[in-house]
Length: 299
Image (cartoon, rainbow, N blue to C red; front, side, top):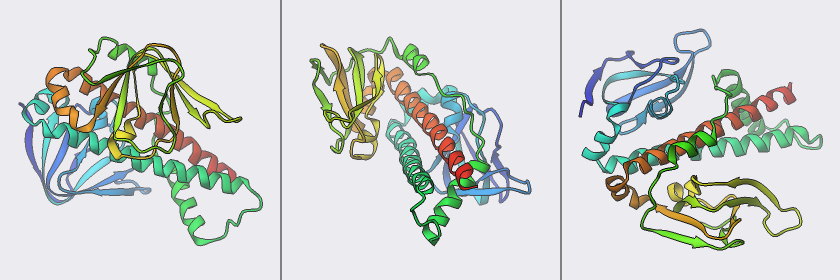
């Protein structure tokens, strides 16, 4: 494989915000700072990357410009993996499949927490009876307004249809189940360790399923991926999934299945990565828009 081991000195730029990326990285030693507006008057340091962490992967998965600049802090060693060599990299390092997917899952989980917090802050701002002077509220408020002011977010929502078109020829896996119409696949609040690929039929995702204020959030069609946070984090389900047609045919995917899945169907693992990227990008847009509402409402 054509991956390259690279070394960087203190202050050296590893990737630059706005560049079109065709490779991603894993830190082998040292640490690196992640910045927006690096080198400008309004430069902000977002976080620090440490040994073992990946970065730059989203630009490779979806061919988007780099969203931040990564700068070496001290002496750094990193491996650079070209996007065109991803399948070869996984073939030679099958354990990295789970590692990379967990990394994206951690980003999804952290962003979900930020989004949920932002929604709660917005609700508080819009309620005239809420106390808006305590220090905890003001700290959270500044965090979300800061994100809105600094983030460079492409507000073009990703296309679910494009994702389905890329995945329409996926083969069916070994762990499958067929459900009749009306079957509850999972309930809000349940904890699980799997995700699903919908191969045929349809699935409705609901809030308050079976109650007077029931709301269907979306209807999933083949080939859709859903329930990924259960697989990645064992989190409680945030909604209820229900089969909307007879012969709803699902493939059940667990984290420990991914290495063997890659051997028989590498395109399926690639599509799971693309799905997670799709979710992350969609959630980023939702979070950005909520932070914008917070900024406007508080002003």
